[in-house]
Amino acid sequence: MIFDHLSLGVADLDRAAAFYDAALAPLGYLRLWRSTRAVGYGPEHFQGEAPLALIQHGPDARPPGPGFHLALAAPSRDAVDRFHAAAVTAGGLDEGPPGIRAHYDPGYYAAFVRDLDGHRLEAVRHEPPG
Image: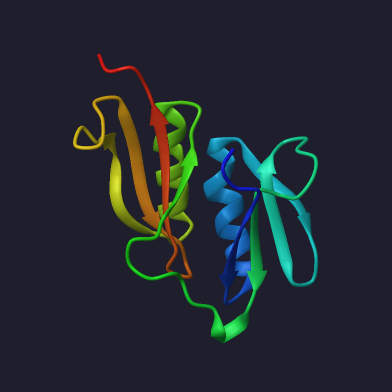
């Protein structure tokens, strides 16, 4: 693994946690812990620093600029589809529906959304072309 963990600043922790609870569940990631200023997510039974954390920053929270997005590994195409549907239902913006992204790779199945704080998220499944 190339990174240990990633933290995203959010304006409203309760609102962001509700969105991520819904959007990450289809990918097999869940809320591992919560404090007064942060929420951590990762795979069930994960030990150590949560791979993804949301940090309460209030009105000062800003997403990274153009070019940044967080790609989350999906266990199946169905999980990508369910991630996209759950994220949009939870108030996220559709940034690209589920489908093959042949311009990346013939086996690259992904969907893109923007969360409630403007962070661009992707769920991706890498498969052999065919």
